[in-house]
Length: 127
Image (cartoon, rainbow, N blue to C red; front, side):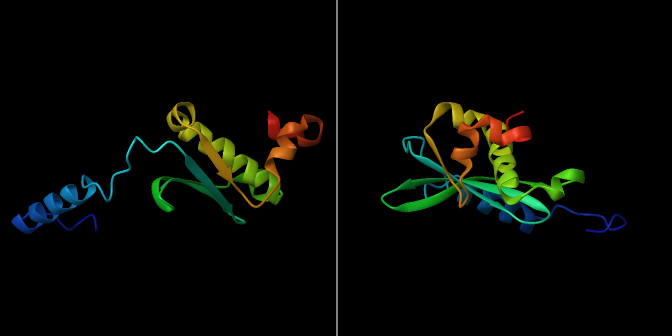
């Protein structure tokens, strides 16, 4: 929307909003808190890191939350393993209420566990 144009809340807008609100409150959209096992999938590229929190029931996965961060300054020059570790730490901070309340399995295609178990190798990643 452009700044100069005025937005008018019409009856159609109200109906669309109510439909969206009803859809988001429906069981097929909302995640059940009874599902205990949750997964975090980490992805990164040259300029950004992201993760999605997913829960699974009966081999069906539903996304709960998505977080992403644009890399700035020296973060752009991090190696892939450092970016994945940064994505995990960033996700854990943003989604701490999920990480503290539920079992969360982190899915990544890099050996983050090995790095975090050996702090002398990790260097700046553990600080």
